[in-house]
Length: 393
Image 1 (cartoon, rainbow, N blue to C red):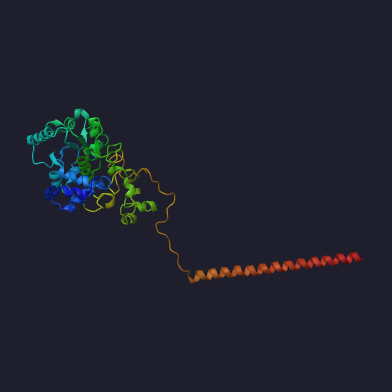
Image 2 (cartoon, rainbow, N blue to C red; image 1 turned 90 degrees about the vertical axis):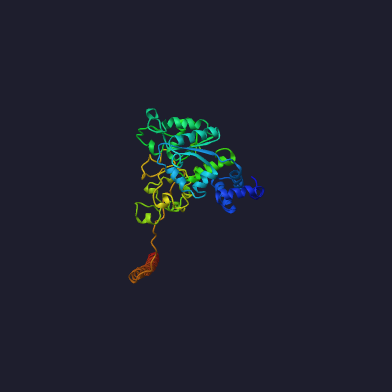
């Protein structure tokens, strides 16, 4: 990786342009790039490459489709602060089509989508929010007269990368829960090929932003796990870094909402927290820049496992989670240990009486043992005297 100072020394004019566009000072801009590099788990010096890519690379065109969803993923993106939404879509990426955020409507909106696809053929990033209905020939969701299943295939054909954002697009999410009358399916299932998935209901916006910037910086998407999730965000269980983990290890659990343990911040495992079987970075990366407690467990509610297929929206919220790689000890220390107290007068008297009785018993035992021994000796002497007398006779 190049040195950060070297990059900025070579492009003072470019840096000033970036500062003007993003409204960030040099220090703030460096911090932003460093944060993205750390979020993606990149090695030391990668922030320089991120900075240079944002400065010099052409903003990637992004086409954002909405299907069966609640727009929560877009709402989460609206609350990102580093950078804010307008800086993100106007300076970091070029959001050319987004039904919720774009000013155009009707035929103008459809024209904007087609123009962006034509002008950026093979280079644009397709983002899909929401599940895609497949039952009854996909008639349960249409946009601009086009069925969702046809629209996603058309847009994905010439995309440089496809990103499924949110649990609905990643694996079906809420719309796919039984009995799933519309046949709601994931983007990967409809396209028949792997895509990058950023599950969550909603996902952290920085996971999406870091994924896009990785593509912008290195020309490829980040390394993913077998489910298509970026490893930098979904390689560790929530439970491993949970703020309540110490209570789990010590056996301190909230048993009911509002009980003493719940009010004191004890572990929510027995209330159904799915953190022990859910891979995500919710416990380490705060949502919406509103503090690190701004996530379900931080607010006192169990994790529902929304990033895991077969857990979120499938298992009952209060069903105890499956422990993936950690097992609680067989025995726990008591939550409240009783403290020793000084002896009362009555207790001291009782102990003294017992001690005196024991001492007296010991003395009497010694005496009895002594008397017994003396009696035995006298008996032997008497028997010996009688034997001598008989011998004389």
